[in-house]
Amino acid sequence: MSEARQFKDHHREARLFFGRALFAAVIIVVLTGVLVVRFYSLQVTHHDDYVTQSDRNRVHVLPIPPTRGLIYDRNGELLAENRASYTLSIVHERVDDLGRTLSVLGELVEVSPTDIEKFNDQLRQRRRPFDAVPLRYNLTEEEIARLAVNEYRLDGVEVHAQLVRHYTHAELFAHTIGYVGRINERELTSFSEEQHQRYAGTHSIGKNGLERSYEDELLGTVGYQNVETNARGRVLRVLESSDPKPGKDLVLHLDTQLQQKAFEALEGHRGAVVAVDVKTGGVLAAVSAPSFDANLFVTGISFKDYRELNQSRDLPLFNRFLQGQYPPGSTVKPVIAMAGLHYDIVTPSDTVYDPGFYRLPNSSRLYRDWKRRGHGTKVDLKQAIAESCDTYFYDLGHNMGIDKMHAFGYQFGMGEKTGVDVPNERRGIWPSRDWKRGARGVAWYPGDNLNVAIGQGDVLATPMQLGVMVSTLASRGAHYRPHMVASVGGETVEPELINQVQVDDAHWDAILEAMEEVIHGTRGTARRIGQGAEYHMAGKTGTAQVVAIAQGEEYDSEALSERNRDHALFVGFAPYDDPQIAVAVLVENAESGSGAAAPVARKVFDAWLLDADNQAEEP
Image (cartoon, rainbow, N blue to C red; front, side):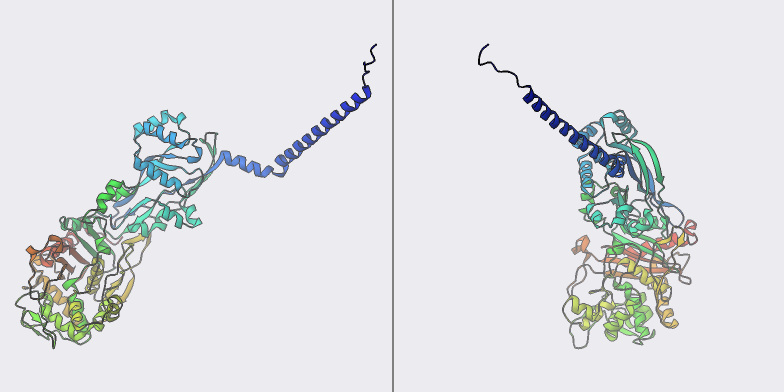
């Protein structure tokens, strides 16, 4: 045999094999140990955690939105209801490709760019996982059928019946009841954690009017369902549920027929009408014209519709009876005259000479009366109110001064919010020395007294304030907070007396008799509306300047554009012997309180006092 030949080393090979086998055994033991430890962790240590996570993948909590409370008028007519609507929604967490899903949906049903933009806005808002986000409302039966046939292509897409707010008299009560709309990002950001829970499953919130004021009562309490789903997110069964509690119903003092008559009486003019129950302060009618369809806002108004409303010169979105601030003109003269009697500045028999103007001592400026040649040589209080003699009130304002006028008018609600249960009210202006110094930075001048005495100058009031003012006059000083809601969830809202104006009975008699003379006297400014009436009324007309007229010049209607002409106003109550209803009317740029505003009030009085359908008892 060759010397190069080597023999096999069995001991070395055995040691090598044993080392490798031992190493492999150690690796197996270690890996087995790791598996055992991991198994122990999964099955023992973290058992409860993983069971919970597993359950969450197949068991979900779904909120059940409550039914929003209904709103009725004083006679039980339904004004705001909830109608069933089929809604197309998407659960984003269950959709693999949102763009593709939206594209498929666009082939099956009509989905506008506005719908997609609103959907994306809501998708970006804070919300609960697996909450369905609405894409389209009011699906037709044909659209529902097409979606059902293509369900296999639409993971995460749901079609379900949803109650949507509907206003039966949408235009008539748009500024009183208001409307609900989609919850926006600003509102969602301001929510507390409790509010997030309350609005789970709900996509709308009260935006304006009574819908906003009584949001907490109307909303109700959300319910929940624990549901088991499959891998595609489809609900297999309901494990347990908690029923929602519906919102409380509202019954209003507002009367639908009276509201309709008041709206029609304006005959297409821009203006406002407020009617108040003298005995309680309940608001029987509140009209702002022109108006708009509140249903447009419920599921999200289109940009086109909103632009048309927002850019209209007639401002249909503007609530004139609550936010419109107008010079009240001569409608405040009864309050000024009452102040003169109360402070012993004048008596009912005192007279002034009215040549058609008034001149302050040591001044050359003439303050014109609306009647160019004046009202006579001896104008007393009754004639001054009945014929609206400016000169009489110039003299009274000069002798009384702003301090007394301001204090007395304040008791009738001038210059302060009335507190009516509708949001966004403005307070008007009932000027004083301090107010002018703060707002204008100048002192109070004697001529300012004259302007306030006839409701001009810096004086501004809302039609709601004027309604409260004349209601306080009609009730001989009972100043109630106006309120539109008569009961909430069956519980009566009690009348709230703010204050009782303390004035001698003889003074009330003098002022109210003069206000009756306005309508039923032979020379009263509103005598035409008293003709043929089956009851007696009391009131006061007013005309408020929109643009200033230079001294020495006459008001020329033809020389002014329509929107620069005077506003027409009227305040009054009826019946005279037992006042039931007080009314304030404003007609923008209609010029004549007696010719334009007073006839509107007469129609409202007739509708309330003579129409048997309106003689309902207190709700």
